[in-house]
Length: 148
Image (cartoon, rainbow, N blue to C red):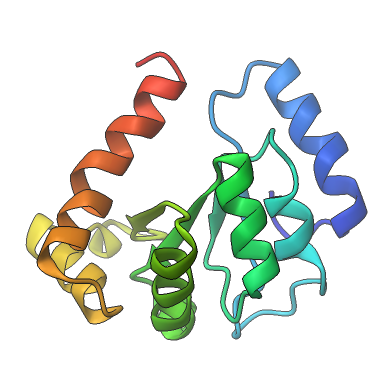
């Protein structure tokens, strides 16, 4: 879900799941796009949301809500969206929220190799062990959650 009013996120996420969506991703408050303030908090409080993409300068409260609701936070490879990765990784590891690395691919050349995905994770400040969890364990958790 992209650029929707924060108060609409719970309704739209529930409807998406009702209509068969396996995964609901909300476009977070990236520093490079005009996303409505409050989007991160609303998404992280909604247990029908699975991933908050490029959350930018996310608050500690939003990260805590993401942890409590089992919402994954994205570490983004995309130019501009990646500017918040260090903050997202630091807060998530401190608070215990789960992370995923994603390309936010808009073109074939945007897809990630395993080596670049590792650079994204480690460049956000994660240790080798933390990066491996984000790249291998967390995607498996998400896939099991949706029955794959």
